[in-house]
Length: 253
Image (spheres, rainbow, N blue to C red):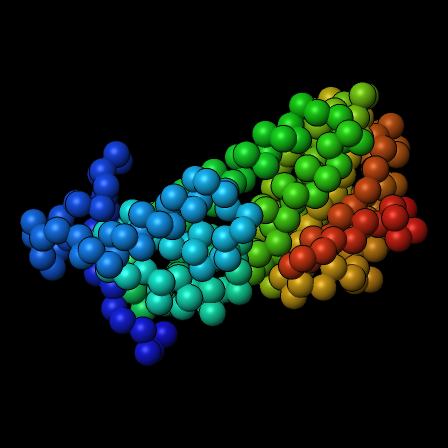
């Protein structure tokens, strides 16, 4: 993107602070106005947590380590302009991140670490737990994992006889508006895992979770194939940008 200062990057040591050397001024001290700004942001984060902080400030905290000696606020705002919100930034593919002036390997690594951590935390809240009691956590996990993808992904949640989530797998990835799904493969995998029930999940990169006719037909085919083998299809969730649609709640199942 034009109009933004180019940010040279230098990765900091794992436990280092803002005094790490940058490539343009070896050994130079961090400018006081940047040091003070970073200290204030970190203090606010530690005292009040992330909730009161706008996305650009939370993103600045992530960028501090990747860019040790520059004001990262313009880059944080450029990233938000490009990808919409904090989740959109950390979930963006590296190839698209690289298109933003000032983003290099160090920035991408920091963002991908945050993304990986958030997915693992979300997944840990639902695995080996009963779906009924952790439904909101399951939806959060689906949004964290899929809402900002720019291609469709089809995931399967496998449940045991107590409706405990025993496996979560990405079964297929497609294009911006289509993902190939084969009912026989879905049921085969459920049998391999000794699952008693399924929840289907896929995302719509357009942001609109309204099911297509193909979505409805595919769901019915999987339901029929599963029933033959004594497996229950509990639901099919379509994940949009900021909302989701449940086939069961909407009467499609």
